[in-house]
Image (cartoon, rainbow, N blue to C red; front, side, top):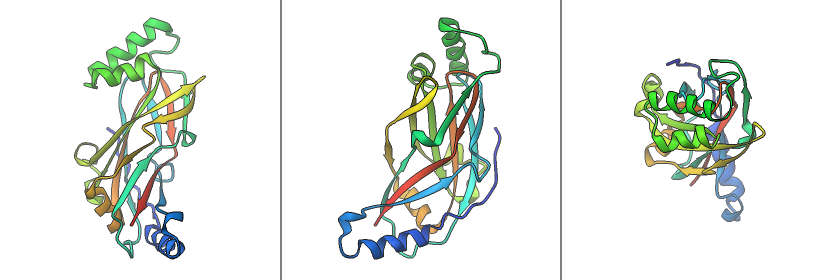
Length: 208
């Protein structure tokens, strides 16, 4: 399992402070503040995938401690930040039932839940799972962090078109980590065909 250990600033404190000022007169106008975690800049955004086989990348992120207390939030994956280039690998040239069977066999061998294997291999979606953990747990965050997803990325003619669910509520532990400004993230990708998946970023929408 490849691990990436790169640090990037989130500027969480600055963005949260701005939210307090802007929302002071009318809180309903700005209930949450977006915090973008740039996976590409951290070297954890590119996944060379083999059909049905999970690929994981992790990275550390650091920013200022939030000057106000974040109490809630969600994590979101927008289809516009996902690209999928199919081609190459052992499954290249396979079609129809043979391609699905090859994907299913690899997925089952990796110990992935059968229903999720069907979502990926039969329905042709990309599975993205996210874990968030302590800054110094980057080596184990893929197994010990707070898990979110799977997010299922639907494809239209090979192009990501939608994500289900659109967002997932953050745990109290993740909220605490965001308040501190330092944390690690793991992202796992399972694709229906061999190729390359790029996930440019994740987004946390946080509120007071």
